[in-house]
Length: 413
Image 1 (cartoon, one colour):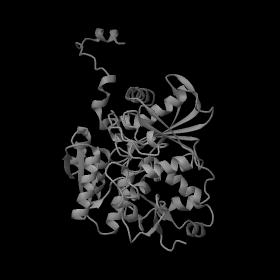
Image 2 (tube, one colour; image 1 turned 180 degrees about the vertical axis):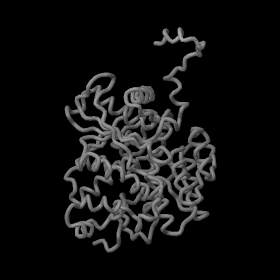
Image 3 (cartoon, helix red, strand yellow; image 1 turned 60 degrees about the vertical axis):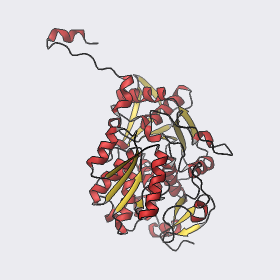
């Protein structure tokens, strides 16, 4: 029986902890972790679901929505959330692609409409709120760009200090955002994993609050809010499939966790099929799901936001996918770039490569006749294409300038 608002439960050993006793990983599992494997001991937040049902009694989802889902968030007061509008992003219905009517219903969840133009704001806003509620003013994170720019922007709105460690090869647009928001940026020689490990050491040495994905269980809780929104936007029904871009495994775990909360409250009676889509150049999560021993393949992909050698939330994501019979596939960089261009010209939505990866997964299913007629399918678009303009240069061409003579316009393609 849960006597607190929430507790933590280790996804590996199953041990439960009071929220006052731990902050990051399960201590029993964390001490056995090694740098060459995904960390064990990631914590799942468990709420007093029976208490929530007793208080709501009926119209449970509507009651939760009225209070901004505070009963399903690990904070006590919504006033500690940033005033920036995070979440509540649009869901667009697309009926045609390339002039042909679709046989299924396609919905595009555009999280580039968040304040710093990515899905990562959902995690940052909750981590920031928790820090504010607990008198913490310095937050550190490792990032390939989006999580860092997200934390930097959210912290700027909350008058908090953000310290961002990034691999030196991170896209300049994302680094520019971080600097403009006034955060301390620390480029690190090496990969995202090197920056991640350094940020953990900094947390241990200096006591900075750490936002890192999975390492901080609240990141998953922030990202799960997209599931509540999808359920609401689809007239309180669940979609048949959701295509999710995957790197560390935190976004997909968040999507699962949100729907799992609704399952535990009896608001829904089944889990949608959730499809994990990775780049073939960085498929360390999906490729290892059925492996007994985790094998790392060095990542090389144009989709930098999901380029990860060691998926930090591997074990939780694996559990969710196996428990709820999720699906997974990987797509090439060529498919990702093609999908990005097709998405843009058909919908007016310009997504960065990581986000376009999810759309590439949908196109793969569509081309292989794996999408049922009249089914409802959602694609999570997790970041703006303006985050990484360099990546799409190979699929566009800018024409040469013409003389300012109207006759030249008759030669347009």
